[in-house]
Each structure stands twice: as structure tokens, then as C-alpha cells.
Image 1 (tube, rainbow, N blue to C red):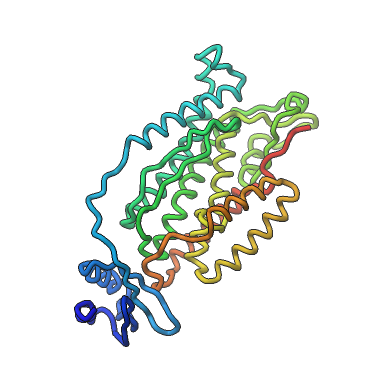
Image 2 (image 1 turned 30 degrees about the horizontal axis):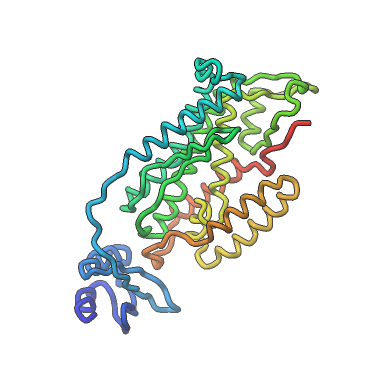
Length: 347
């Protein structure tokens, strides 16, 4: 420990220490010196975490092994993507009245939906991946889930974070980048899809699945269908449906709960007060669940996955105006994309 103490004196005002814990204050400029401390301490085989305990700043030392040169895995992500491409094309074809079992050429009917949905989901996960790598965070390539869900043909995609997040700033940027890109891609896809949607008799839709509407989807719908005559409703083009799903997925990910992107953003902003935000959101969703029970399923999933967040290495440096504006942008996107009652059976 004495060697570490001597090595960090020019960056950290030391007031005391114990085993793997150093008390004091990071010298100014803090951000620059914290980066220097990370570099110096790592040479001794420790990963430093920067915390506050009362009025004091603390460096917590955690042993780690120098990682071997990281190899990016391509085969599994590629196979999962191809399987998901097929499953979404297949389901997209069935939902347009095709029957690929009898006529394989009917698979072409599923291309518009599959292309649009995978573009949104892929853009979302690549946003996370590229932003994580920009911050020096190790992450896997996007892994798609080729589960033949009867409505969409997949259960989405994910990346796995394999190292610590360097700061609260990085946690906000990594958390927001995916929903932001998915949201931006969903807008033109929705516009194109709505332009090719049509009004049909309500009788033709009986027994089908009705979709709720977010603020933004409602606004875009009214541009193309300012007046819907009585007895008729909008039959969405597959790309409009994919855009609707894009908004839905964006809002679900931005819920400020647990392991969701919004949960990570809320933790970076509110830190110890995140529990209050979580309790409010749980109560709201429980209330909405009285009309759409699916919210109870989502709450169960959130509780099963837990409320832990990726470890943040530096919790001393606060958020600047830019990061707070990014968090506010995430809230605005959530409010525009959120659908209180997503699905209902058309009587």
C-alpha cells in the first residue's frame, strides 16, 4: 500500500488509509487527475473506484487481472441475426395473409416488416455498442433473439457489457444512445408506412389485435388520416406496424426501472434517490395494469432481473449541463413514445 500512496500523492490529497481504501480528496482538476489515478493504480494490479463517504472522497481498490487481448465474437451474433431475419420474414408473411408453408415465394410479403423492424432493433443495439466502445467499455456485438413470437417473430436483441462503466456521464450516454437511434429510425419508417396504410371497414378488423397509440404515433397518424369515418379504422402497412413497435420498444427501454436503459439513466441522474423514482413508476404501472394486465408481466420481469446497475468507476464527478440535457432528452423521447394501453382485442 505504501508504494501506491507514494505514486498517487501528486493527484490525491491523502488523509488516511486502510486495507484497499484510501481517504482524502482528489486534487484539481478532478477529472484529469482521476484519469491519472486510474492509470497509475492499474499498474499495481488494482482497479480503483472513486466514491464519497460523508465529506471525504474515497478510493476503493479492487484486485483485477490484466485482460488478454479481447477477441470480438462474430459467428454467434451472425447466426442469431440470420435466424431472426428468417423468423421475422416468416411471421411478417403470415400476418399479411401469406402461407410460406405452401408457397415459399410468399416469404417476400414479410420483407418490408422484417427489414424495418431489424433496422430499428439493430440501430438501437449498435447505438449502445458503439457508444460503449467509445468510452472504453468492453461489450459484445448485438445478439438478436430469433423466438418466433406470433406477432413480431422475435423477442428483440441485446448486448452484454463486460467491463465497468467509467463514469455517470458514460452511463447516461451508453443508456440513451440505443433508444435515441431506435427512435430516430422509427420516425421515417412510420411515416413511410402510414403513407401506404389504408382505411378499412371496422368489420374487417373484428377479432384482430387493436393497437394503442403514443403521442407521436397519434400525431403522425392524423397527418395522413385527419378524419377517420365512423365504421372504419386504419389498417397499418407492415412498415407502419414496425415503426409502432419501434416506439413501443423505445418507451419500454426508457422506463426508469432496474436493468432497463431508463433505469441506468435514472441511476446516473438521481443516484441514491433512484429508489423514490422506482417506487413512483411501479405504482403508475400497477395502476395502468388494471386496464392492460401486461404491465404486471413487465413488472415481474423487472423484479426478476433485479435493480442492480453496471458498476460505475467514478461516482465523484457530478453531471454537467450537457449530461442533464441528455437525460431530459431521454425523458422527452419516453413521453412521446409511451403507449399506456398497447394491445387490445377488437370485439
